[in-house]
Every structure is written in C-alpha cells, then in structure tokens.
Image (tube, rainbow, N blue to C red):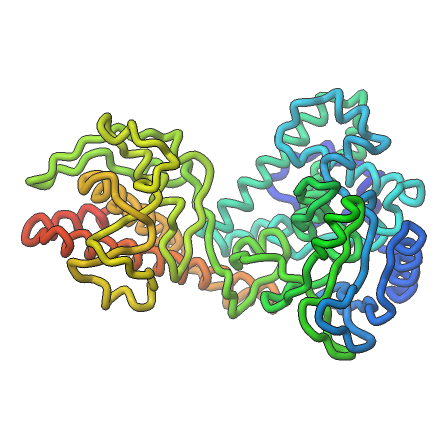
Length: 478
C-alpha cells in the first residue's frame, strides 16, 4: 500500500523491514523518463541533445551520451530553485510549520520533512516531476531485515546503521510532538527512512546562490558514481549567475558511453549505508570511527621508566568522528589526540600553531609516502604531520591510536560469519565486500600506527624494556 496513506504508529519493532515508500507509477520506465525530461525543460533546464537517461534493473536510472561530448562541453544547466535543501524546505509550503518547530533534532530534519510532504502532494508539488522519479527504496542497510543485518555485526557499518535508525526514531518522536502541524499518519518512521535514504543516496555538495549546500539536484543526482568521472560545475557561470548551475563534461565522452559523476572519496561502508552498493576496487576506501565507541580504549598514563606520563584526557578534542585510511596516516585523529593529551606546559600552544599540525623527526624535509615508509625508519626523518608537542605527548598519543585500531579489529573479528550462505547474490557480495574493506582499512591503520611507534623509538634510541613495554601497551587492548 501507499506509505504516505498508512499509519505506522506501531513502530515498536526494532528494524524497518523495507516497506516501500510509495507505489511505482503504472506507466513504463520510458514514459517516466519522458515525463521527467519534459518537466525539467518546463522548469527552465537546458539539456544537451547528446544526453539521455536510461533504466537498468540493477543500477536504476543513469545517463548516457547519444553523441560525442567534447571536453568542457555543457551537459545540462538548471535553475537553483529546483534544488532541494534546508533553505528550499523552509521556503516551501510546509516552511511556516518548519520555522515554528526550531531548533531541529539535526540540521537535515527539515529536508526529510519536506521530502515526505512533497511526495504526499504528488502532482501539486513544485518538484512533482522529480519526486515521481525517486525509487521506493534503496538497497542500503537501513532496509535490511534483522537477520541480514546480523551478518554485519561487529563492523562499523552495523554500528552506524543502528545509530542512524536510532536518530530517525528520535526525529519521529520530535515530529509526533507537533502532531497539530504534521499528520502522524503521513510522517511515519518508514517515511523518514525513505526520506533519509533518498537524500543521502543523492545529495550533492553544490554552490547555490553563492552559498555551499548539500542538496538534491534533479537530473545531476540521477547520474551514477564513477571515481574516474571528471564532470564539473562551471564556475564561470556560477560567478556570472549565482542562480544557475551548469554541469560540463570533464573529458571526451563517446557516443553510447555512460555519463557519470564522482560522488567523492567514499568507503564501501558509507556506500552501502547510503547508496546501497559497494565497489570491489575502491580507491577512496576509508572508515569513520566515533569517539563514543573508542573512549573506553584510551589510557591516560604510561608508566614505563624513564617515562611516567600522567595526562588528563580532554575529551572535547575527540568528540564526533574521524576518518581512517588503509594507506595513509589519519592526520586529524593524531592531531586531535595530541590536543587531548596536552599537559599544562603544552596547553598554551594555539590549536592553529604549525607545531601541532604534525610530526617532525629529525631535520630533513622528506615527503611522506606510506609505501616507502620502511626506508624512512632512520634517525633523520621528517614525516607528514609537523612537530610533536613533546616526546611524552607523542608516545601516549600514538599508543592510543594503536589501541583504537586493536579495539576495532577485535570487534570486527568477533563476528565469524562470512555471509557465504546469504541466498541473495547482490546482498551477499555487498556484505562480503564491506567486511573485507573494513578489515583492510583497520589492518592498514594499525600497521601505520605501529610504524610510527617504531619511528619514535628509533629516532630517540629507545631500546630494551622500554621498547618492549611500549609495544605491549599499544597492542594489549582486547
């Protein structure tokens, strides 16, 4: 049935079962595409005759070239009033109600509410042609049945999926409080899952009226992801007309080739959570790690003669999340760790001071390359992140980074299910790829931190029991 017409007040179940957000239209896919393209033109879009849309049962809608596109050639332009973001939500018909319920549970709440409202309005919506093209669901982990989600237990992705679901239930509770403004039979939990999935599987970071914003961009957000795509927004047009967006081809595209966008460097876990797919060879693979998860892992003292390090952890420096990578050192995490473990003498250093932006070991200005790190483990080393605040600060900071890596690896390895028995081929591949990706990132993160410990030890000629105890403390968390 139509989600928007059903009341899901019985949201006591733990997980969303993938109930469709709305029925597909009865017309064929080609007719839907034709209607959408006609709507775009009516709303002021200019679309190259060399661009067309198609539909694939697996990938959904996408764009392709019907003629050769030259480098720099316009693919399409559209007025900024077609973008859906927080500002457009607050300026829409539902806007007055949104403005009365501030502050929101999070900054994207008005976008979710606006999407549900516009879907409910159907043909009366300003975005009717665009809304009609949105799918019922996304194959992301929010729509996984509980049994399927359990295969991911122990992964960051499992934790993040649970966190998002909890956040959406908080937003639903918030909306229910204003039932005089938002009909509970329309603004249900399932509708919020749909709106969240639509936004985060399609949102692009663009310049709208001179201001950067995350927004739904009709037509542009239908293009599929390709790390190699170099399509770009024409900045000359943006400087001349801030109310217009123009997308150009970054390379020559031949007749019949798919036209794609680069969504940015996104790890497989983020891709599966928001977009519903993974990439076997993902050059942007990374993980977000949350302080609330690893807070219990940190140690505030290191008692290894000659070191007697006692530090009060400034947790405010470690709030939120950090990105970690397989083949590079997580600069933001290390810098934040240094700040969190500053003592009174180090606390006077300004956060923006060059000293705190990175390590300098030795006097040579050597460009850091993780693939050649073995050759750099010598007394004269300069690595990427600037100068330590002190040897004691650096030791406790890097030890704790190692402990975080061990913690996440132990959590991941606690789940021995590899997903080989999952009957759905696509879900099985996505789950296996996500788990393998996390394993690679975490192992790379741990190896890089251990190499940094080795660099510190060798630079300062720390041997024997000191060396042994530091390694032990860095790896003992379980």
